[in-house]
Picture 1: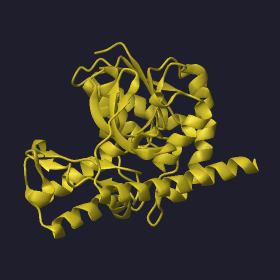
Picture 2: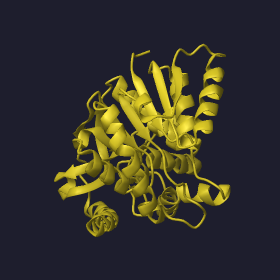
Picture 3: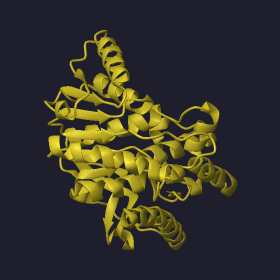
Picture 4: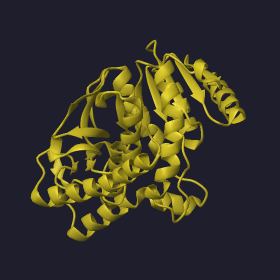
Length: 315
């Protein structure tokens, strides 16, 4: 277990599940929890801490309320925000969650000056952009969790079609965390064979559609919330790669600086994760169709960012 501290702001379903996942992994010495609901924070601390005694995990879990008690974290995860409800897109959340980000980030930076920040709040790409704008941190230290989750969902739908072993499937989804995401068919593989060589065009179209609607389908079923196990586990993988400096390649949301032909926009692309956060952006060789889809996804993100910029002008 590394002598590292992880802070989690927002201990609803995603934040609590992430806390439990990290505690079971024993990859950090301490997890600080913070939420606007102080009783919820204490309850989750007690419940998860007591659960880990059964299997003797050593990670200490601490409930905090004051900003100055939430300090010196190596990684801060922000899941706080209004969750999606049935019929609500991620985009509908833009202004509400941007305001929440404005209330959170300054204290995070003040008391955790060396932290790498992982954003989970939606609309994800726009929230990463907002966090970068407020924090003034370099792009390697503000990262969005999305591509791992979307890729995991794609793998699930491939698994449903082929019933292959889970460790045989590798998927990649790029672009924004929304309906314009770009599942990479030719790069997604089963036993190192591209799925477009295995599946029919009808099956591939179904996988793409289901992947794009993966989060919304869970929202529709739950009625009162959104997915949390898969987002939490995806975030835990990022934290593990950073704390253990493993140099894993994961699709994450990051500010582009001429990579893939774009700049001053945040989007999901493959990155190498290590102790410095994003240590390198990996550029896949996209075909013309994928480039067009990626451009469309980027344009959808730019529209959200422009809304944030216009709002700032009016203040």
